[in-house]
Image 1 (cartoon, helix red, strand yellow):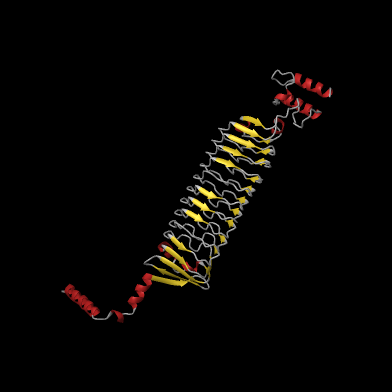
Image 2: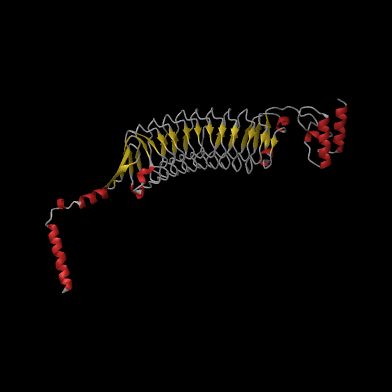
Length: 403
């Protein structure tokens, strides 16, 4: 009986409700609107509007957009599919659109001049970006981990590519860098595993540490004539790189700059270079030919460590000047290769310090080496028996006294 009464009462309420016009119930339209459309401010003179049905976030107004956009709606990041930034906005604050994981498209206005650090980082579904030419600054890590981004054409007024801007953009295949860019920052394109093509304009003077680290698809790189500095590990692990021609003017190549480039078959160092840094080409297991100018005075430890394929070294000087180079440890693959000299300058017998003359200093060094049983070069073998011993020391002493 009680159940029957309850059912009748509910039916009566429903019938009463159906007799009331929808327009007379004020709360329902407000609730529906809130479910479909959100809005608010995101800067002093900027506002936002989000259509939950289409997933489009529209930014309008003037000046800078800040992170107040998310203050009351933090979960909205995951719902955004498209961002439209209207004309009038000039600056986007650091990280303001980071983590919009389902956003595929963004429209940037001509009025925008600056993109903050991490601005679109971890926007995993972003497939393309078109920069207006007025942009002069893109902050560190701006597109970090944008794994669906495939092609980038940077704005014409950009002068520096900051650190980590496109790091870990694993689908990025090509980049267009405009003339006028002077610096490619540290890790700017690191771990862009699909990057096969990049043009580096003549205006670039510095490639910072790790800039193209682990860009395994990169097969060729044309270094500009104006480049003077390559940072540590700049091309570390670029296993697809096959050849390298380093222009004159490059005075600084950092530690491990081309280490792990396992497909690199040849390298030509420019005239004027004085030092080949530590581990610079370590692990370049396919490297077969190395050309070194006579300006080099130091080859640091491990510069050519584990370069198992080196067969020929073309040196711009003579045997004497080659022996003056300070060659560090773990470079045996280089020193044991076939050496080709540009100059056939004859060595002076017994000249162990390679200054071109036999002096008392040479005699002292020979005596010390014999006493300590250290090896001596072949041109100290005065009697031609393929062995340097006290007899050769005596003959060297006689030759010095006869001068």
